[in-house]
Length: 349
Ligand SMILES: NC(=O)c1ccc[n+]([C@@H]2O[C@H](COP(=O)([O-])OP(=O)(O)OC[C@H]3O[C@@H](n4cnc5c(N)ncnc54)[C@H](OP(=O)(O)O)[C@@H]3O)[C@@H](O)[C@H]2O)c1
Image 1 (tube, rainbow, N blue to C red):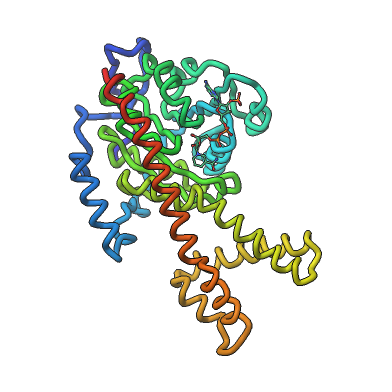
Image 2 (tube, rainbow, N blue to C red; image 1 turned 30 degrees about the vertical axis):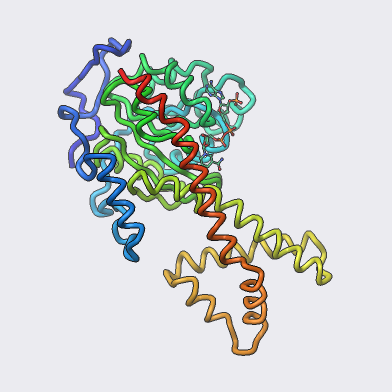
């Protein structure tokens, strides 16, 4: 497999301020990446796939037999020291492929630095300094800060860099428009359980990101949870399904517990059992590979308690309400993406 980082080749960039020699990937002249060529084509393909029951089969998977070659000197930065940066940093370090001395985090205040320092991660208040000293940079700040922060770092971004944004609703076009032409950008949508390495993460590659960049990201994130790649059109859906979906599950867990409290169980015990029920059901669903309807029917004794309860849930419209929740959250993510879009053309170099 081709080396991700090639000591023999340096490739400086006229618009960058990093003039010193840098280790960079052996990257040929940038081209639009293999799978997608035109945004409209990509969206049409994704739309078609979304109407196809076999969608799950077309998620781009890397070959587990040929994991990407990891450069142990790869330096990883996090702009933003919040929950998402911390969850991803913990997962990245768990792989053991990247020593904590190669990881740095930046934020304006020191209030979130302590937990990173406990991991052995360096801290700084300068985003520019972080970018200059890192190869792969996760941008993990709130979406409304993306324009300010990318404008601040753009002069420090060179062809050696891989920029990974986790900002909800900020499109690849916007990100690319705020960074130097042909910057390698990936858009990653994690969810909160990344904090306990049980996240569900979906990423899309930008125009100049190659398969090996995706493979590198997947490899780095392997301990954060499930990591999949798909077309960008799926990112907003993933936000509705999994980013927001976590909160939908919490609401359900709360309701389960409150049902038990209503029937006389102490609250603490009810919440603890509800949490374990959600966890156990989720683990069985994931590990069995069975369709949820099949598992559900396996719990239903004819005329028994579960089918009575399920009937009540259907009468309450849980299924329709949940589908609408995912739909509404997805639409909201799309709307946020559209709002961030004009900046792209304004800032493209
Ligand atoms: N949380 C989730 O479940 C979730 C799921 C999917 C995607 N995301 C995305 O992840 C991103 C981060 O979310 P989060 O929950 O981790 O947010 P968070 O906990 O509020 O953390 C935000 C971090 O950004 C830092 N920050 C603010 N201004 C900055 C600046 N100018 N330069 C550098 N850092 C700056 C903050 O610094 P201080 O420490 O000084 O306050 C803080 O550390 C968001 O874009 C969100 O859309 C979150």
